[in-house]
Amino acid sequence: MQGTATSPPSTVRAGMILRLVTSDRIVSTLHYPRRSTWSGRVDTLDRSSMSRARVIRRLVAESRACGAVVLDGHATEDLLAAIAIARRRRPPWVIVTESTWALGDRWLDRTATRLALRALNGPHVRYCVGSTAERDRFPHTWRVRPEQVVFLPWTHYLSDAELALPDRDGAGIFSGGDSFRDYDVLLEACRTLAVPVSIAARRLSEEQRAALPPNVTAQTVSHERFMELMHAARVVAVPLIPREDRSAGQATYLNAMAMGKVAVVTEVLGVRDYVDHAQTGLIVPPHDPAAMRSALEWALDPANDDEVARMRSAAKTVARERFGPENYLAGILEVADALLAQGPPRG
Image 1 (cartoon, rainbow, N blue to C red):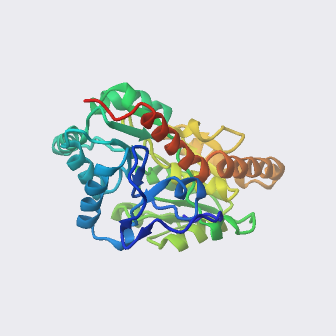
Image 2 (cartoon, helix red, strand yellow):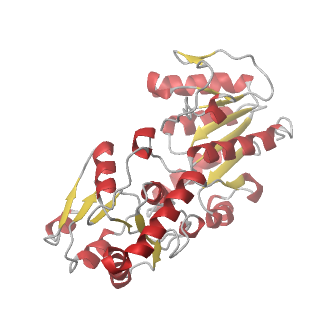
Image 3 (cartoon, rainbow, N blue to C red):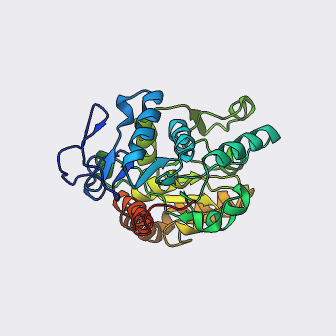
């Protein structure tokens, strides 16, 4: 994800950080070199130039000379580094973004995740979650203190080139992604629709693929092709499985909204933090093919073109302005600044 703003010369060369050590210095693996809000404040380790082992070593080393470390909650090396940092007698503040971890369906998975979290946890850690519901549930789910959990709204992930694509009415329906998707509901909803439906997903089962309706195609595609299919569609469907432990799907429906598409999204944790029903998208109940089909039919009906155009415009504005990368990064810095103002964390 690249920005258009210019920034000072990079502070990272071959993984080496050049800035002077200060108590308010922030180190991170989140690499946004063209976002001035971020690059002007944060010393970044570009993981693309390093092995996982080197990322861990660098993070642990740099954590000794900064006030805060910002990590990616979905990167194994970041979490391993956080565990190593937690063993220090005086660790810096550690901010874990995208802390959207699932409990897992098996006892062994739940136990392993809780043990890992226990190893990295401490008063110095803050967890950023993607919904207000998770902010309230995360402390109980993962047995941390409520003050350690922060709601940090997600951002869309469109590149500059994708943001510059011309508005397109598009045709048919697109759906994509793998995280907690309910494609059974979508397939049933689309079975009687007379429009093409394209699904981009890796985890459709053999049974689902064998039972695809004639108007539905499913394939595994590159990121570039994923975005092309989304841009070519009139409607983007995001069918989700409701869970009590985490939200899902934000990146997909925010990307769709930022492209100016009508997103039809299942009501699960977090959706109403981002989508205003009937204003910037359509929210349907979970496990309800009829409701999904009705919403898709409404969005596809030419009789509703004026309302659809208004919804698309509102969605595009909200996704790009309220949920754009600059706001996301500013939110992380706001969390970091509040922690740094307290001084070093206390055990």
